[in-house]
Length: 457
Image 1 (cartoon, helix red, strand yellow):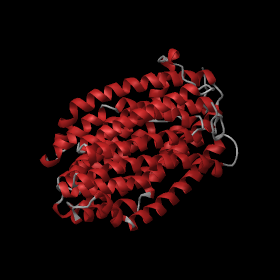
Image 2 (cartoon, rainbow, N blue to C red):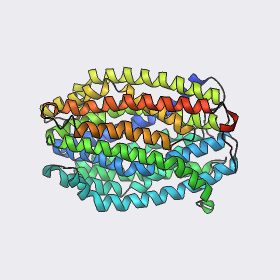
Image 3 (cartoon, rainbow, N blue to C red):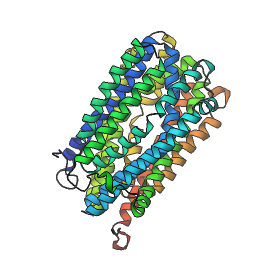
Image 4 (spheres, rainbow, N blue to C red):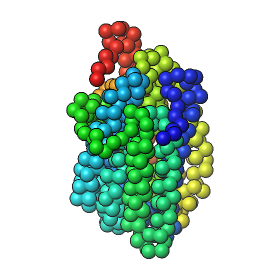
């Protein structure tokens, strides 16, 4: 099968990083546009309560999904290390371990998501006028979660091999289907939030099918053969060594967001609606920064596997400059255009738009700090170290935010949305500084021959 791929271990880094990253950015933006279509359709045809219902599910879904999605990060890093070191058998075994792992992960998530939807939403303090719709959305969404895990594992493998264009094409096709089904299910059939959840599940199935076909048609070590699917112990252990800390980090990160969402919920459904729309808008800036983080992960992984440590240092330096410029420029532009954009999501509440603008002010202006944090974390993980960034993130992001919420935010004088949102800025800055120190320490250790990794099949 003909593939357009970027050589991650040779050539000028800046141009290679840009070429590799742009399709990832476009993929993420398209995904957000399709997700935004969910909120826009619901907001225009069902009202702000339905927008709040969908928004209330976001933090919960991320909490449940991130633990297993972290395993796909582990699979991608292992594939990148194998390709960089030209260990084809290792790559083959990793691919054929990753896919059944994705199936099992998706099955576990399906049971948890469907069975626990209502209870989890109750624990979050979701208002009575929202919780019924939110529970319906979550249960239908998790019916398609196996397809989502398959896509994420497959996309991680393909990107680690240097191909970022195929996931873009697949997501575009699936997203178009999602938008068409949104209109049919919500506007024509009047299914409300159940309609957008059903459309999302179907489109996820399409993207999973396409990514599997792409793996089957490959002609290199990443080629998937169903008869060879087997959970190889060594590869699974390595995937879990890198992926589990990444997943736990994501899950604990989401716990802090769930608690923040619960705090937002305490201000009522109007605030929830503005917060949900603002979060969706922020996603366009975040996905651009996160795309640079994904590129950093795979570039670092392959070059580390090839033993090109000086190139690894250059990768982080260039990536930090790229993500700073991306976050600062896009964050400022989106904030300035925030009010009319929020008006696309919310048509029946000027008050909700005001609350959305408040969130954008506190999040978007310093958003580049989040990008710096994520890029440095990805660089460390690309070096094969996943436990250390997990611990730092737990302390710097989750711990600090929870401490802020249960101390400063609890004070009557500071019990405001602005004070709540400010916890993001502090946690990003502190975590980035700690992650950067760890990266420099690891790279310094690699100068010593006895500290350099030995790869074995």
